[in-house]
Image 1 (cartoon, helix red, strand yellow):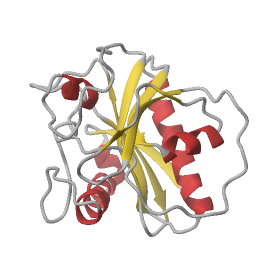
Image 2 (tube, helix red, strand yellow; image 1 turned 180 degrees about the vertical axis):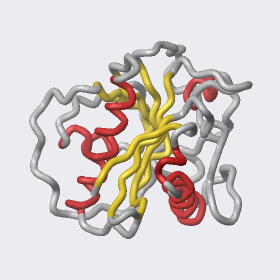
Image 3 (tube, rainbow, N blue to C red; image 1 turned 90 degrees about the vertical axis):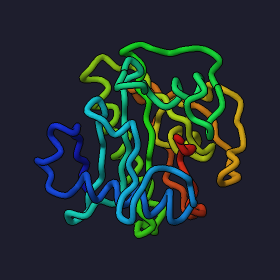
Length: 215
């Protein structure tokens, strides 16, 4: 497995990787979870896939098997900024105002659309995918002054991040998403590992969304 990072202006250097990541998102979030988010028959893509976004993908033998997106909380593109801020302003019907305050600082980056392919079947490989994704996100943020990653994610991700050595913490009370019935909460992840890695789990959880729909 290998990690690649890029933005829209440099995605051409990685062949079809960006398109394949969008296709993987469509396969999971639309076809599997039935989220009502923008898509066509091949890919899922929303308003946060813009020139301010960065991507951290995992490839195996040239195939995209996992990935995530990152935006600085200072981002503004047209009428949109980043997902949680837009939700707090009532622009996203699927997500309530969870933080009760506005975060706009270059030290905090929002991470969304984290997905691992269902073709990655072993828990060890899925944990390795998550580790590589977060490594890429950390690199992206740190190079641009980021100190904390922030993500609206499924609660199981909190435990997984802690096992990878990140001192992840909840930033709000969990809520149940009406689209899929899963519990989500905003969590913060310092870019530095502050705890030793724990042994990889030996069981395989059911595939679940890592974050809530954005629209």
